[in-house]
Length: 277
Image (tube, rainbow, N blue to C red; front, side, top):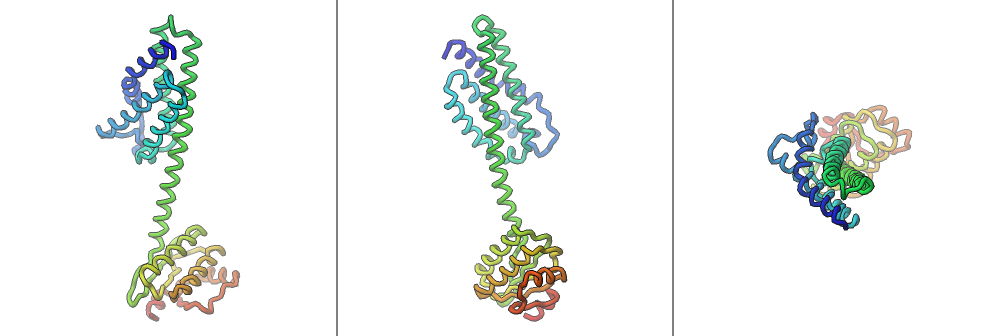
């Protein structure tokens, strides 16, 4: 490490908070869901702390091996990438702020070069800029990858919760229960319904399940097959099923599939099904 690199490091360390303040003062964000639209003093302080913490890590490229710097960047990414406010912010907005931070950071390097023109040659200054840009590119790539991964996990968890809530097994009397299906059912939701229903029936000790399809408009062949598999699986665990609300197009799909209704108790409406219990 050269003395001029150490001097640059010390200069950038001293200016890190000023860089963050310059960044925040020029921040414009109209999206109320964005992490950058914060107005609360505590949230602003946290956001500025996060930015300064990254700058302090970035400063190390002038004095430390790049492998060590990258390890510290990974730690910063893991912390910020789990922050709910950042997870709710669109990726293009975060990319924009990385670029703005980079530009402000480089302007301070230019300031240092101007003040130390004798020791900081043009070639050395260009090398510093390249290091900064390369490190920012590394950060952006891995940060967005982390956010994308966490967002996908979050969406899958929300989807699973929605699927569970959209197929509730409602306990009635005498160990009977009702499963009213509503809305569009694709193959993924049909499989989720099968798994959730079996688990809920076993957990709640259900002997008789009323499965109502009157709120379902369209069912394709794969979904129809899944529903009949559900009925078969319920039979295996000792749960009798009464099917109601079958629309003509659903019945036609089932017939085309060669699915048998012989072992299934069917009623036209849910009211008829419940009355027969």
